[in-house]
Image (cartoon, rainbow, N blue to C red; front, side, top):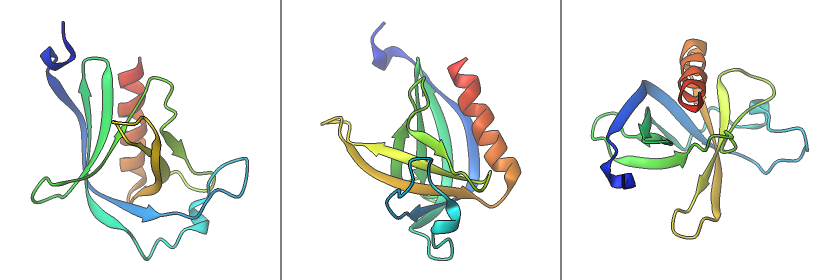
Length: 129
């Protein structure tokens, strides 16, 4: 079955999340949301996790128009989503250029509610199972 033959399944919709410009990682251990200027966000909108066959991706979209801001492929090893060290509500997404396969950017992403962050984690873990 060709990849285009798979149907898309929406695993999770979170109505409000925020993306941030983040400083380069200075520690080998990981990122800290405390290093970010969370009052100056890059983008705010809706998050959708979509599965298509074995593939999974995270779309950051305008909540009204559905216009795509960014997409993050989520491989089975989870390497493109990294939780920060100092908060359960913030993550770093690795955006990869599909054409070249090269890392395009690292952006911070956060949720207002811990329950949204929990649902985000569970949806990704459930897809990998």
